[in-house]
Image (cartoon, rainbow, N blue to C red; front, side, top):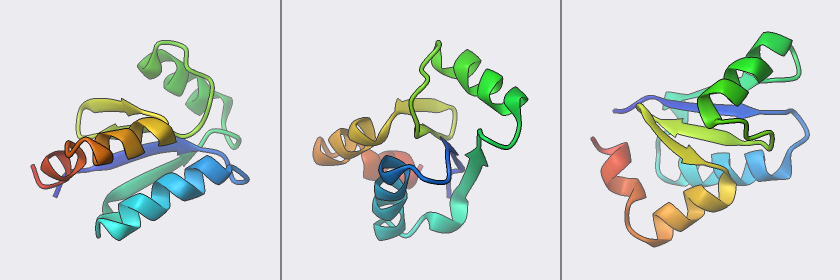
Length: 87
């Protein structure tokens, strides 16, 4: 299965919601959760990879940048999430 990277903070309801969808899809063991509050270098890394997006979560599936929680749910609603997860 594909690797998932999620930049997050500990008290983010959108991060919890995004993870819940990925748990539903059975890929929670593939999620690398990166807490940007623990290391300023991780925040800088996220900003660089997302073109300056400061909100969390910021989600990558494989090498593909997905965006935030709403983007993840929209991708799922459009039928594009499962093919990415099963790639």
